[in-house]
Structure formats: C-alpha cells, structure tokens
Amino acid sequence: MNDWAWVTPKNTENMVQKKIVTSKEADVLVKLGGLLRYNKDLNLKEIAKLYTEFFEDKNPFDVIYTLPK
Image (cartoon, rainbow, N blue to C red; front, side, top):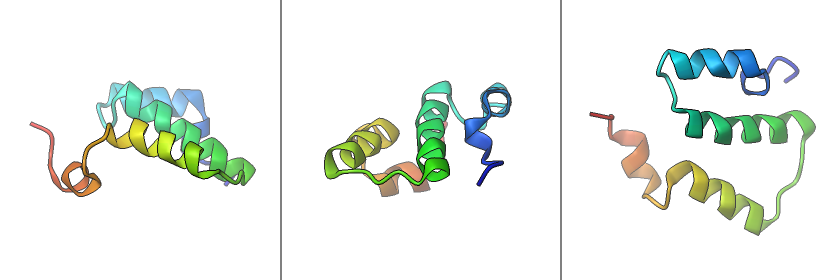
C-alpha cells in the first residue's frame, strides 16, 4: 500500500486534470487512501461522514451506475 495513488499529491492532481475525478472526489479518495495506508479503524460517525462526503446523500447505486452527462 505504500504506492497507493491517492496519497501522492501529484498523482491526485493528474487524475483531476484528466477529468477522471473531480477535486472534491479526489479529496475523499485521499482520505480513504490515508486510512488504508495507516490501517486506521473508524467509528460509525467517521464512516457516516465519509459516506456522506463521497455520495453527497445520494443513493450509492444511483451514483455508481449513472454516467455523468
């Protein structure tokens, strides 16, 4: 996990510039990358906050299976 792309700022910047993810999505993925890298346990409140940030209170299936316009 030491080469996890989302903990490298330049790599994250490249993904945003290529319009693969938005900068907001990249911020959430950087947080997730840090959690994976440092094997941090989350409590339910922290999990709910990340979920809300990532899916913006939308149904995850709608987000995952609906392509942007």
